[in-house]
Amino acid sequence: MRKLSLIVVSSLVILNVVLSGCSAVSKLNPSDVTYAYLKALAEKDKTKVINLSCKAWEEQASLEVDALLSVGAGLNNVQCKVTGSEGDFQLVNCSGKLDLTYNDEVRSIDLSPRIYSMSLEDGQWRVCSYK
Image (cartoon, rainbow, N blue to C red; front, side, top):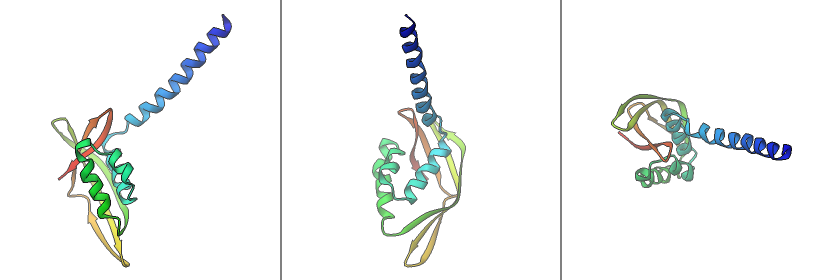
């Protein structure tokens, strides 16, 4: 009987650890996910960019990564915050720049005019578009 109790308690502890690890990922807020998307984009990590995108945005996300393949890219002082909502979407605005380098020439894309539409899909916040 004591052995059975030990097994049950051990199983519950392991289950609790696994579930708390899963919930930590789903607790990321829309601004954190937007930043992670931009970081993955700058790193040209197509898999990660697609995983952080809504299903309807995956093709566009893939094209965005492809567009950066021939340049260096990096984030410059990027910070993101939720600025409102529109229906089921959370709206996120980021300050800072995406710096693109080609032949030692740096061109910066100001991110502040973009508003990212974030949706909760499959229990995760995902980038669905930007304006």
